[in-house]
Length: 189
Image (tube, rainbow, N blue to C red; front, side):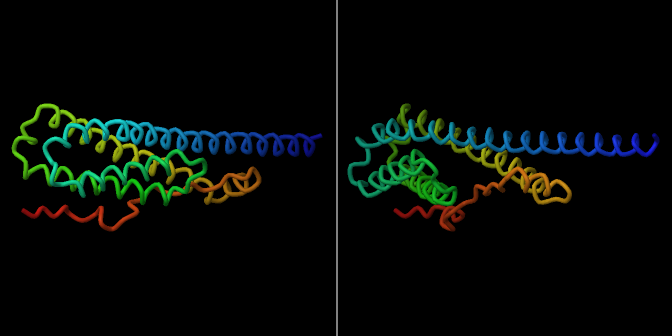
């Protein structure tokens, strides 16, 4: 009877390990999905703030239509990719980099317009967008941390056997898509 108990004990331990490992993978995947949702919320907030910023700036920067058009175009592209079902993370990163670069140029250019810089509405919107940019960066770091933990779990032995059996796929990291975003904004007068 002892060998039977040993076999039953081994089966129970294996089933328990399988259950715990599967639940761990589900928990890590859900955290990664939640982290992506946090990025999504902050991106939506930025998309909603930009039209208000553009209205505040238009009256002051009539001669800088290229900069304003670049911001509008970058926002439209980012919103289109964001709203497209199944959009690739790399495409979103490129669009977000272009939008962030256009906003940086706009804020840098605002230095040339003292009346605009002094406008309470502009300052408030600039602060809101800066705050949103910081929140987006924090959400990206949080997402990438969760993705790292999940990807390590599904690639590590013996968890990878469970991940493969239940078709868990690795997530992509959210990376800066454009080298230009890493560069400082050049302000020329």
